[in-house]
Length: 295
Image 1 (cartoon, rainbow, N blue to C red):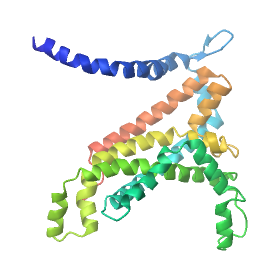
Image 2 (image 1 turned 45 degrees about the vertical axis):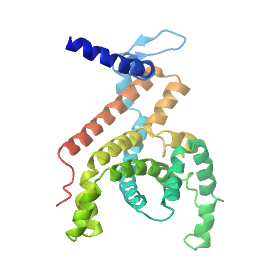
Image 3 (image 1 turned 90 degrees about the vertical axis):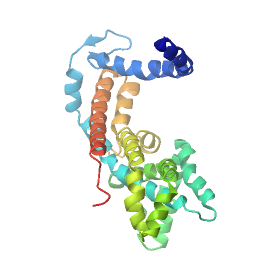
Image 4 (image 1 turned 180 degrees about the horizontal axis):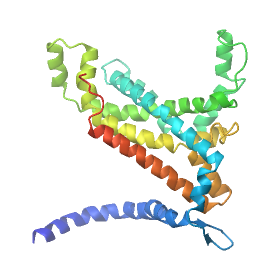
């Protein structure tokens, strides 16, 4: 009788979730499962699809372009700690009772809801050789020549990292702000009575209690960094050369431009394994407690 009661209680919940689960199953789970056998074939849209075993994986590790794209994606992880630290600091700032702080919060969140195309047009204008950034630098005497920020191999990837940082700050700031507002005010009041400074309150109260949020934000930020695509696709198309070619962009080129679906599936599985390994490391780090805030 109890099982029937639980089942009847759960039925409305499953009914509400059914449309979403159906969409996830068709457009997420099915492609993931289908990509495994597809990666073992030389898929042809018009001709005969041939089973080739692990040849696509061997080809991947001998493909210089893929290895470069993989390195660029791993290098992009540099964004993660910087993004999280700045987001926490800004969240602490906007959690203060300062006049006009609501407008400040909204201003920081605007880039999050702005389309990548609009962001690309704006930054392309700012960073062009005749753009605002070069004009300011030359006017201040910091440099005497125009810099091709997005057309120079040594700077393009780091400029894209900065754009990712700028666009993501507001999103993670709001998540950390929600975490800050869930911390009981009594803890801070007790710490003030005990003579704790603001820095000590942040180190001994804020950071430890924000740790679940830090874990979640770091994990999704890490996944986003490895799979970064929009910035490269819109602004540089992987250039100049292969300096901003990332694994997601390379998989897109192989799959949807050159129609090498089998090879693209193999590349996607390799990247998925790397993301999975890094995610496990983050999980393990969190389970062990991370950095000791009291040490």
